[in-house]
Image (cartoon, rainbow, N blue to C red; front, side):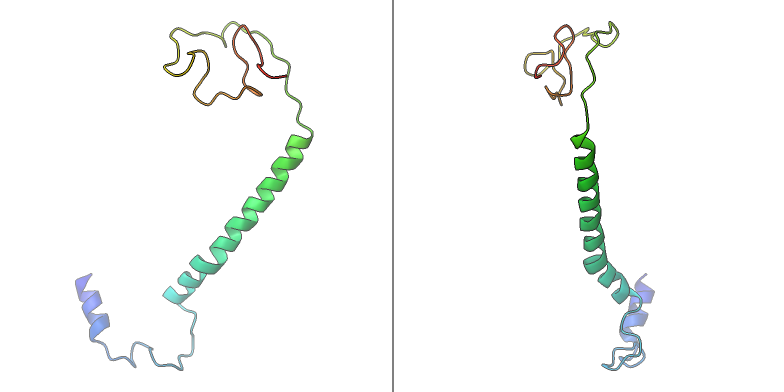
Length: 106
């Protein structure tokens, strides 16, 4: 690695293509830098907009399933160590039913 760096540093500036009139301005590291700072953010924002639109379409016609009390789903051998001990860490009262209670919000 050091030999490669020393070789690049010790080469004359003309041999490294650092003159102002280089033939190919977007090659090698410059192309990757352009992609990193221009194309990747555009791609990420475009993907986020696409996913948001699809999720809104899905939520428009989503119907919450009826709660059925299954014995194997409500097993609590030990209380959760937070809050009241019956709700999971990422409990959502609109979509996660509680054993014996069902959905908290209708």
